[in-house]
Length: 327
Image 1 (spheres, one colour):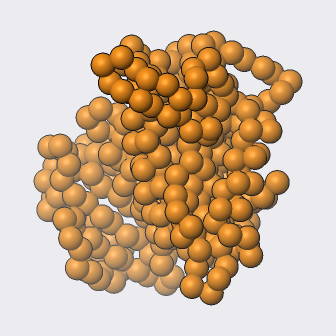
Image 2: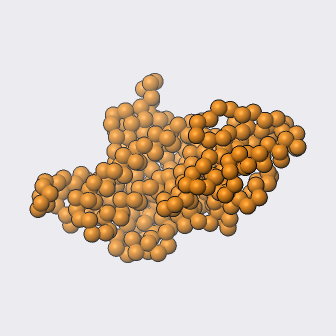
């Protein structure tokens, strides 16, 4: 059976490829930069930080569910863009894990460090009232949570390649490459019933192009063994290195029923057995033959049919990256 992680990434990435081309996954943290760099002022920036903190925590909870069973570290690939992903458990509390993650962020600050360094921690804005900037935001770090679960998100920098915040933001605006801001580090911690803390970590490398994620599915991705419906356009290829499984996302002008019928016919003729599980707000098919499994999920979104096709072959998942949790 497919790893739920891929469907999570697919759902977010497919949506990013529609309409406003929103960023995917942990990169959502960048949404608060608009308020920071535009002319909305101090209070708007603080509100944006609070909002992205809530989104980051929500995503962490989804990722923790999606990565269940991925003990250790793996390399995830979205349209050719790689990042480390994995989970582990520790006796440390949620707060201790987040403290360690934040300490790592401050020890190797990215381009957003000191984003509000020139702004007093507390003060009053005329016509608005009092404000208080917590320590994390003053260093470009998002932290949110409770004793039960929490998240830290930041960009780590390279001391050998220092860059001013203004220069980094200008470079990122032109390139849409997260590497211009640093290495994105995303740490989610959750206290389990057995007293252990489960930690989910995602981390990008030197380069991670949001443009490739949102726009270059046909250029950067690749199809699987099953032919796509006629006229469908590929927007995303999602994989975990070392795992015999690939998910492709397509957009089509054809109705959901027509797209589903294509796979019913194509795979039926090839001798696959079909199962149709119940699914809310989408059409779902599971086809299997001699251990080869194909999962097809189709739904309507903004006038297009969004189609996620996962091909999974028998095989043992191999860890392909070193998972970094605590310094």
